[in-house]
Length: 381
Image 1: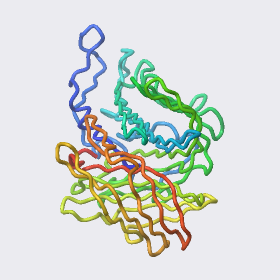
Image 2: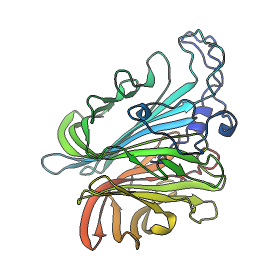
Image 3: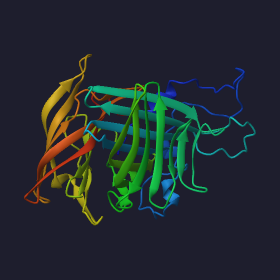
Image 4: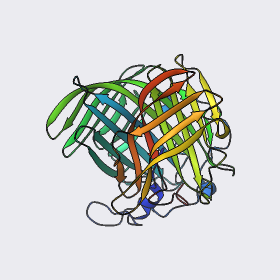
């Protein structure tokens, strides 16, 4: 995910106080400022291939300014009732690590943000919640010892086995608890994990996925618990200067086919309405082998649109096709209104699709992320 996302973290953090305060209201000596810094001046850039090692790279990369851990999935109860979910954790470094040691327990240069949503397809409801905290005092953070874990308050993803993870989040009126089992291992997107987004040096991220996570657990809505099974998807990205100066947003797709293939695509939109040549994708075979897709290898055609109550228009059905890889899919949201209205507005929702792959009929479910329709991403990433 570009966000995923996904994110407008720079804008979000800029809305908070420029000087941090202790619980008693006195100024903190943490030295944190939430003014945006130019990432290319202070932070590491995604400008060459990364030597990925796991589980190390499941964790945080604080030398880069922005990072996220993104989970989505489509779940079904025993009667076929469908729920979509999103749980995304964002890390944003305010400044590079200071040269002097900080003595305050509140001191940190990391801020964490999380988005949690559940889409109840039957009831046509999209529940959403956002929380934010500094990465100190155990309120939020990432660890690898003894195993990978990311948390923001009690929202958590933690590794509980070699290929197993536990996901938990709860908000007023809705919650989720899942066991995730990785079926395909780590998938590197782009050029061996280096995902170019723009023409300039550093307009890129390091990007890997787990494209098929077997999922079982409980979804609770309004005190009603539903035992569910299904599939989830994980994206992990980190970088410091992702988008180019003329790019306003992106359309991102993760699709899980019923033939055990997966497809990730994103197209980056320019402010003149054109599509960036750095748009790309990854096709994952049933044996976890991958085919890298360039912008010239696929086409995304908008078939329908949906308008918000305050007049913004989002795409709401697509035809996605490739002559080189021979797929032709029609992708439709399970619910038109899956817009997230946090500090940053974007559409993130469950979709279903059907069509042809290599001449065979396929169906499946996935997630789509749409940014830059209610507000531009220019200057944010």
